[in-house]
Amino acid sequence: MTLPQLHLALQIAMGWENCHLHEFRIADKIYGEPDPGDDHFGRVSLDERRVQFSKLPASVGSSFEYVYDFGDNWHHDILIESIALAVPRKRYPVCLAGKESAPPEDVGGIFGYARYLEALFNPRHENHQDMLAWRGWFDPERFSVTRVNKALREAFPVRARSADKLPVVSLPENSDSSARFAEDLDLILRTAIRHGRLPPQKMIRG
Image 1 (cartoon, one colour):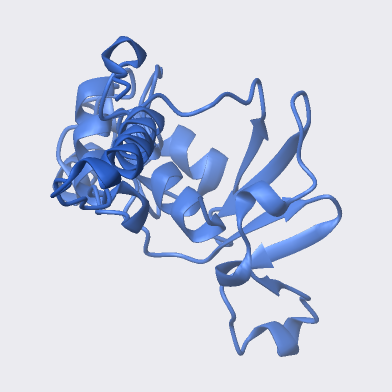
Image 2 (cartoon, one colour):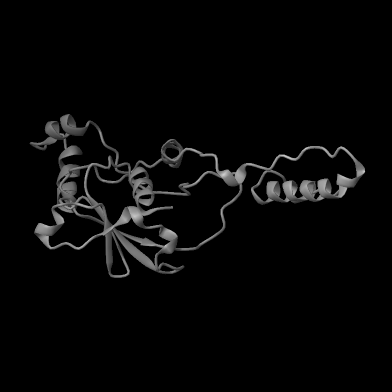
């Protein structure tokens, strides 16, 4: 997974709209999208598009920071709890669990979010109708794993990989080629098992 893909997965999990700048802060380095404005603010950012997450100095138990929307300034500490092999035929990325809704886009950061909720849940508040008109009703307790995973599947469609294409072997025309055919058949089945096409007990030897 690349850092831009991780960013997209986080946006989907949070229910945001990917309409602001972001950055990752990993091992004293900043990774983000190239922005001409960086030169004016003295911000040194590495191009995240060139970085595979697996190549970064991150290990189980370590953490890094994800910052979204430099105006609202949402900071997230991401902890790497474990690293495991992918399960064959399982779609990734996948959301395992979650709790509560993320604040709406452009709500004004932590303090703006507190003022927004205060006005939204108090019908007598002077800004109550304005908050309803701005976003409609908002439930801060709502979170749906099903909804998030549906959006993740749409954003990360399954793509055929060249490694999944198994070699084609013609049937032998005489007994002299039977040994070679058995070897090729064994190779095909081993490749199929390795990529989750067959369970190990289906292995056949010539």
